[in-house]
Length: 533
Image 1 (tube, rainbow, N blue to C red):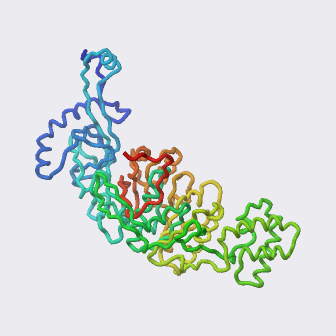
Image 2 (tube, helix red, strand yellow; image 1 turned 60 degrees about the horizontal axis):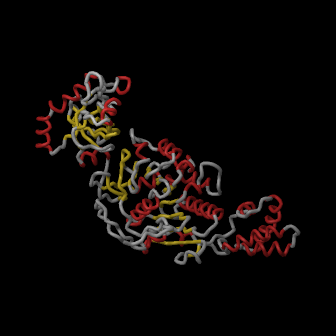
Image 3 (cartoon, one colour; image 1 turned 180 degrees about the horizontal axis):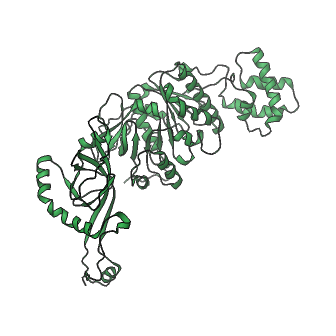
């Protein structure tokens, strides 16, 4: 039984308390498409524009509502002509389908009665703005007109207003703008000067994305140092394989063996790496005890300090084995437990009389991978601390080239709660590194656990799919220019799509990350392999 308009039909408009629209506005919206059909036809014929809706209701300078007249998706760009400024760019922040179907109508349908359903789609559009005579991004100070046609945005307008530049000399190509064949390139100089973070949930594609960005650095001969806790990046030497997708990213497989230097503390496990060694010269007794599992530090501190002072009086460089030999020669009664702990450090073979020289570790235009696979977490912290401090101090005096320091699993090396050996150096690099040409690329699957002092300094952000509410809150509070609706979209991002902001781009963009050219080393391991059909 059809619905009785007088009793069953609900009002399709929302109250003024909800969004400022009245029934009269809704009626105008219903009439608007008919009044503008001839105008749409003329504009489409002359300008090649596709009409997708009409503005209705109360109109502000920051957002407006439109009735949708052609297929349109959330977060798509649209354009509207302003009477003063010409075309203004907007982005769909919400879409809603309004119907007259009531609970009584649903009951009628359940009983097999025909029900006429009236419906229409309306969208809320956030205004991005336009470029003025000085090429500055501006928002109109007077509202658009109700009844104006809304068009699907042309790519040239999107690029102009948003500030997207293609095929630039300093651009790092990270992917294509979602829904458009537009290259999104981030300015490498800005990445180094203002720091970067890549954030996502586990399996969200952060390491894959960071690999694509590092490939761009290598192509532009940027000096890079990668802190790699799990040994994922050494595979970049090898040529990858690019899967066919519905999009052509114009990427060809290649390896980067000629661009990569790899160092590891455990060269038995990482056979292609050069040995990474440190001297004990700059460590005091407390630092060394901090690397052991010794709980009663005070009882061993004086004993160890005497042994180190003895060695410094006789040798310029010394090893853990030398400290053990002095302790054994002194034959102190309580030295047994300390010697056992030092023997464990000696087995890791990180410390030696001759350490790795900085000009071996960092070479201009090369990417150095510090492969920490097989290294205990406490030793990883010490190694990262030593490297971070060395890079910062040497960069301050110009002894190494301007460079980017990439830190995987950053929540372990600069945590929000507690403090580890390398916490201080990352806060220092984040706050002061840009002045000396030392950029920071922070990568983490737990944004809420990364030191806010570090994360807040990352002005370029690449956000992939995140589900944890605490992580989403941490991201939302740190992204400038996050438009209405994007916070919710972070949870819904498909794998391979990211929200990118900064790096020369004036607003957050949805970007389909380009395929890797080199082999990806962070693939998940299958427990039960798929059977081949």
